[in-house]
Length: 310
Image 1 (cartoon, rainbow, N blue to C red):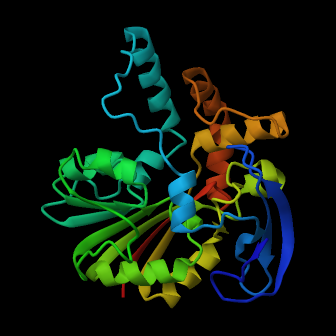
Image 2: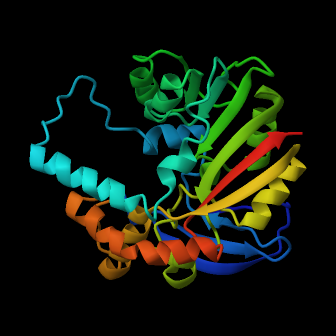
């Protein structure tokens, strides 16, 4: 069993929040989420091996990437129905807009996606005139990303070899919750930003309602992958401590996250399919009003944070 101190303030004064096991992949791993009594940060305080190391992620995060694998053509009816679901979902789910802020205003500026996977998230940036780059520990995913224009590298930010003060924007899209030492990563990213450059961070909200009422059945409880569950206050403190200012925190609730939490709560330990069907995505719209209220109350599922290199 591995023990951690608070990744934000370094305190070892914490209280048990809840215990959980790995339920998505059915790995024989268990852990305990705790709350820091000093700063309120929620994090994985005790957990089984394998820990959140690069070697562990290369084993556990290996994508099922099949280059050249044909995708069955969608029927006209499916495409029409999917379009309707997407448009209605956007009334409550701001994920697309928030996750691609400034994508259309590149004008030759440079963006780095940390944890880029296959590079799909950078398509809108490339189309918007950005010079794109990405880094990921998954070599198979990076091999797919390299089919598109851009500078894609295997490894971590610290060892990828990018020049300092190179990027106008660095994205960490559902990355920081997986990192054992987020302080070190944010310091490394700061060095890569031009003076006044921006960082965009997307992480599960440790103060989300789903974690409050569903706890281990929340989609954000994921042993051993989610080692950090940031609150808005802890995220602000961490960014200020690592040299950022003009910090703006937004709350967002992807409807798919809420639906998966409901599925896991109903299943009570039985395996559930993480990929939502079209029918499930349509049904998740019924949770839209709850998502809207949660965002207003600061209890949305996701924190979307923008900050500037001070």
